Image 1: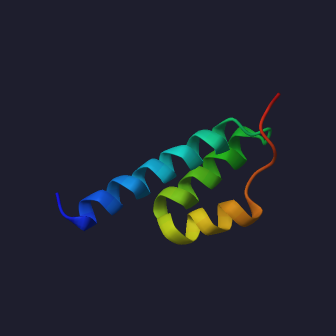
Image 2: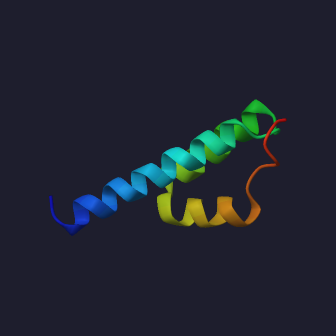
Length: 60
């Protein structure tokens, strides 16, 4: 596996982490699905936007 393979796996792990964090947030399900779709369709930009203005805080 070359450098791109390792970076791809790291990126995939970050996207999965983001999706889990989004799903565990306190937002409505439709907003969660929207955010997960944004992160999945636009991986780099979606992650940056989610990090800056993503859905609410995790459920307690």
